[in-house]
Image (cartoon, rainbow, N blue to C red; front, side, top):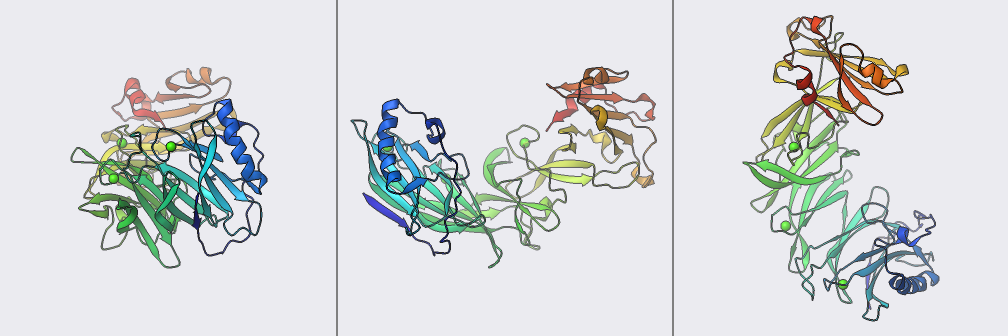
Length: 457
Ligand SMILES: [Ca+2]
Ligand SMILES: [Ca+2]
Ligand SMILES: [Ca+2]
């Protein structure tokens, strides 16, 4: 067996007890429930490690968090078992152990190799074919992409290839803030796009690592927007596509915090370079994507498979020219050159979980206010005709539309109150509306039209 040691500066000598819960059933421990005999065979091997002084220490985050996982790493059609341990002895310089077990023909398991790490915990693990190789039976092999967690802000990414008992390091441990695996260059194989925010050395960039001759090689880097303070906590880097001249182009959307709002950088692979397509070279910022409102996230608002970047603008209320309570959102798609196109404009009500597509004729001509009666389970938004020229007090006295979110036992009665009609009904919520003929403004939308414009978030 070959041991692969993962060396780190011994900054973190104290072991954090991050995985103290007691596991009870095999289902909690194993990625895939196994036949009783296989389970016993594997358990025999695992018990040896545990009784020699180790505890389970599965990855903390991501989709693969079980302390025992099954994956065909060498592409021979037989799943290996990957088990995660932490040595209980404080003297062990590499307390984290990733055991890779191979199942033999008689069903018994043997240890193929052990990957060791000097970190308090494993943050996450991914299995990905990075090298494009296939195994003995023609199955795709899988590499291990391990994120070692040194602290709650410091991670290191390392990638390993497992061929039989041989473990090779494809990517030596690199500090990073977040990463995605995505096929950026359209060769049907994913690369690593690593995001690094290092405020100490002022490094804010995305790095593109691609497989070349046995290594993941840093082929290109591109800057993130300057002045960012960290990645947005409610929007993870998103690996997806943008639409350029009708063609789907791989792209990574990275949303970061600024002191006053959020900003999105969009990265694509063009002419053998990683490009931040939204970055304004003059300001060093993706200015066009900046937004004050941090709660409205990138999403595929029009269901066409491409994510849209929100551009929220505060809407007027009857009392104020602008308030931060009501937002009209333009949803933008960017092409490869970073040119935006508005694909939809909505009033977005994150609080009540719905949005309304704003007809062209309403834009700049609507003010909003709230009419909530939380005691009776009624949350309402009123739409008023509004004239920007008049500014303050430019809203009419009477609304032309009310939209209600109704909850509570008598919601059905309230939804059917005179003048109201139902937009959408769920188990314990009814969304209803009322068009007011006495507002003096023809909004150009009838009941059926409004139902089409109304959507849940
Ligand atoms: Ca295998
Ligand atoms: Ca690729
Ligand atoms: Ca879309």
